Length: 110
Length: 112
Image (cartoon, rainbow over all chains, first blue to last red; front, top):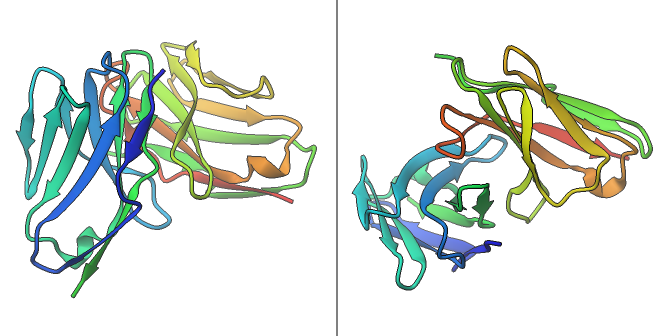
């Protein structure tokens, strides 16, 4: 099976700084990855995804990096804003199901 | 375009009772997934339905079951409720099987 873990349960950053949230997975067969944002009392919201044939993908203020050699992916948020405060978690798919990490709680300090 | 909807938003039951949770996917999505999110834990996969069929189930006892209707909506049934079933139950849908999943707001189940 797959196990997905995030490196830090909590992260605090100053408003305007860049944030980096890291995630590790165990199954080399995982070929599709998604980052989600979950605000309190809400369902997870899709942020960005990446397939295993890529090592970098950029969105609006977000970048996902995938290192298949060490089975690691990261989410970078540029110019972090108070509205970015939430729990972020990654998901890895092996073709049969998604496996989710427990999440990193990001707090943005004004 | 409407997102994934779930009902009810909150549900309070007592031990031994049965709970039914409902989900409507995004229009055009045929795959529906159910997850349990207990406090402090990551999402745990429960069930995957596609085109009306159960395609995969997670490591949960048989008292967790569900179905998908011809209009692709789905319901999750939990029988013989136990205290540890208290959690947020999330439904997601995708256009392609095992690809980008979009989540609903969840149903918070409390078992007393």
